[in-house]
Image (tube, rainbow, N blue to C red):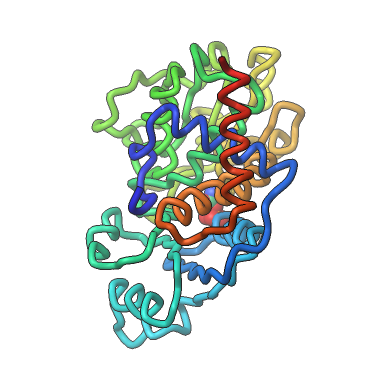
Length: 313
Ligand code: CP
């Protein structure tokens, strides 16, 4: 794999291997690669993704090159390509990039180090998808026949776009729920109401309205009652059903504030899992690019895969 830009790059088997690898890292993780430098180039605000990449990188013993866009040469007009090329020139081995453009990867075809997509406009957020998958996988141990509803501002959500196809690839039955005007006509998925969603779903994934990507005004109380996860709707959910949200959360808009840490919420578990899936995808890329020969890492990586294969036979 050259870069990790889209979950579409991964087969069902590869997705499951990464989830199993991430689970293995949760209990014990390899440390101290040879000296590897990683630059985190975030051109949009981020708390979870950026910080969990940094934790993942440091757990692996990677040297983190931090980049603050607001005081970088971007302010003097430097392009994304020239910035990426600069990091490559000064010795970065890996780039993690978040940028508001849907298609920023197209500018970076001549970069010759691996790149991980940490968010591309409204198009893709593949590592968020992996951590959502891991959270569901830990809960249910399978995706086959699970009913999963993604609800909210579908049209502007890179999380929804990454998750729909990956969940279907793994065997889940996916539904969408959105206010009028926030549906995405390009996604061929059945839309249902929030009341239907809570009645039928094993997983309800709530999304916030992406105000930074459009100017459609949503009145908070009206939005929660019409389209959000209220306390009354939560009571209608199946006993075993769980709530996900990629966060940040707009409390009292798409979800009642009291539900964020309720028994069926896995919102903070999702954040925890972000560290481990990011470790797994970093190691996959470094290994496939021949950037680590650390036998411990490769041995541990292979052992986990062989162990899981044997267990599944
Ligand atoms: N879920 C997510 O991408 O959060 P951040 O914007 O804080 O990284």
